[in-house]
Length: 109
Image 1: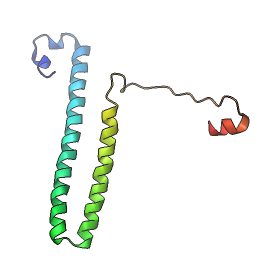
Image 2 (image 1 turned 90 degrees about the horizontal axis):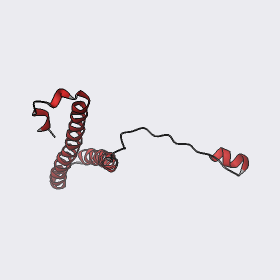
Image 3 (image 1 turned 135 degrees about the vertical axis):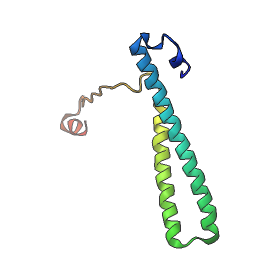
């Protein structure tokens, strides 16, 4: 896609050019997120090895917190990865109707 941006007539259709730049930017952001997670995982893996040999209780607790944060960030990135379809950047309307069931159904809806 970046090769398209170097074409002489790239800016003749400004809307299409902007879409391409937005797509490139989104993909670079996704790649950077996964590279960051990978690097943080490697760093924590190395720290686990060091802590196993000579870590004190305070350092081990901090390492556990860092692992929890990495796990949460990984979960968020994983959900974002699942939502990369053609229409996933678009808004949606959601309607919930209680149907039959009276007041209880309305309360739940």
